[in-house]
Every structure is written in structure tokens, then in C-alpha cells.
Length: 382
Image (cartoon, rainbow, N blue to C red; front, top):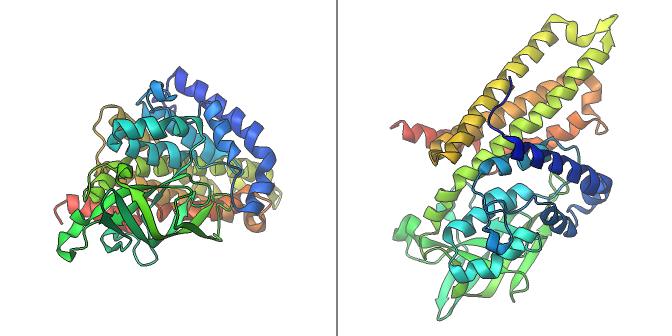
């Protein structure tokens, strides 16, 4: 089914993204996978190529467009790419919106030019060793100390935890247990601040080149000028920005699954057993027919969500539906594609095997499937 959500400008960006991935990323795949992180310079090259900061105002070097379809195009092309690449979605879709919605004029002037150019790499630190989906369990504290906060605590599973220059840290600024969700604030911790330490670079099952780390804060003095948004309103700020992150994950899940499906379809036409292509066996033909149908249906919902963003109508519930359904579908599709490849599907030299490991996190990060269903269920009055 032909998609109609994208226009000529979006397709031009798609071509640029593909060319960038082939030229700047593909040659470094093995190097970055072995290192467990991409080279920092690739973010600067992405900025030069116009792949960062579409929604950052032009005065700070961005594109000045709030059209989320540009973000979606980059997410799709990077999800289809078979190799190591920088986490531009984290920068474009997750972090930049925090600064757009919450930063004051001084903070925008100070930080946004680097975000747009790729010289400043961003991360967000929510998860702790003892607090994942339950953000209310966060213990990292920020104590008022005049013109500063004194931050203590640890975070884990932090994407871009090694490469990041600015980390949006979710801290407890109100120690009163009765404060509930009104106890948290967002503080921007900068590379080089005394007491801010990178812990282990975590050894993940997949996405090897995407640096993920532990972060430690030992009496880190963070200026109050680095408070993002309002004090004790951090939980509500997070809720405001999560829908775009979850839609972005859904977009990537379906685009990645579509790429694997297309390769698998061709494999089932080329691979023969008992004298004929394995795709012509009725069971395999039915599996492929089901996948093709479900991917088309998922893309229709994603495109409707994209239109919802353009119309400022996308809700947290809409995004939750997209996130859980598309990531679970992506997981099922890739699992089926491994099966259709037989023994070759278990070999790392085949893209489908690598995708099986890389995609598994999608039903977990950005809010687990179970949390997404809980959000939807509550909206139903249950």
C-alpha cells in the first residue's frame, strides 16, 4: 500500500540519510561494534548533513521546522540500515523536545547551537538500579544549596551514557515521601562537572555500538541555572515528552521489521528445498502473507499518528498503543524471519540474526509493553 504521509522534502531528506549512512557509517561498522560506541565525530558529520535539529530554531542553527515527519524519515532510514550508527533519534526525538518546551532563553542560547551542529551529544538519565518503570521510586537526590543543587545517586541503562555532553538527570528535589510525583526535577549535568563519573559501559545483547552506561553522581554541584523547567515538576515534564519518544520507537520498529521482511521474502524465493522455492510451501506462503498484511496495517496507524502530531492531536494513549503494538509486531516478524531462514537465521553473518538481537529491547525501553497497556487500560476507566 502506497504511503501518502510524506512529501517531496521528506523524500529528499530520506535520500540524504541513506547516502550519509552508506558513506559515513558503513565503513566503520566493525570498528564501532568492537568499541561498544560510535566515534563522537559522527554526530558532527550528521549535523553537517542536516540530520540533526530539524525542530531547533534557525537562530541556533536548526531547521526551524516542527514537522515531525522529518524526524520519522531519519528514524526509518536508520532502522533499515544494516550496521552501526549514531543514536540520532535519542537526540532529535527524545532530548531536543525537552529543551524546546522547557529551556529558558539563556539555556537555549547556551546549549542549542551545539545540539544542532552535533557538537553537543545529549542523554537522559531516568532509570536507576532500583527504579525502572516506576519513576516514583527514584532515589537520586538534589539538595538545595543556595545557587546550586548537590546531586547524589546513580543511574543505569543510560543510552549515550559515555558519549554524552549534557545529561538530563531526573532527581528528587523534595525529600518528603508524601510529595508523590511532585518531588522530582530535571537537572542538566554537564561533562566535566566535579563528582560526575561514568561507570561501566554495559555489555548488551544487541545494539553493541550504542554506548549504554552507568552514571554516578557524588556531591555534584549543579548550578540552579541548569534546572530544566520548574522545580518539582519534573515528573509532569517527562510525561509531556514521552509520546514523541514512544512514537519514534514504534516507527523504528516497523521500519526495521519491514527491511528484514523484504530480505526474507527474497530469501524464500531464492532458497530451494525439495526442488522448489521454500516460499511456495503453503505454510511459509501464509506466514509471509500475514506479515505483509500486518506491516501494512501498522504503517497505516503510524501514519495516522504522524498526522496527529502535525495536527497537535496525538495523545499519550495514542502513542502508547503505537509503541506496544508496533514493537511486539516487530519482534514477532523478525522471529518468524529467523525461522524462515532456518539454520542460516542463527548465523551472525546474516542480517536477520543481528536484527533479532538488536530489536529485542524495543518492547522494553521507552516504557515496557506492560506499562503501555496499563496506560491504555486506565484511559478506559479500568
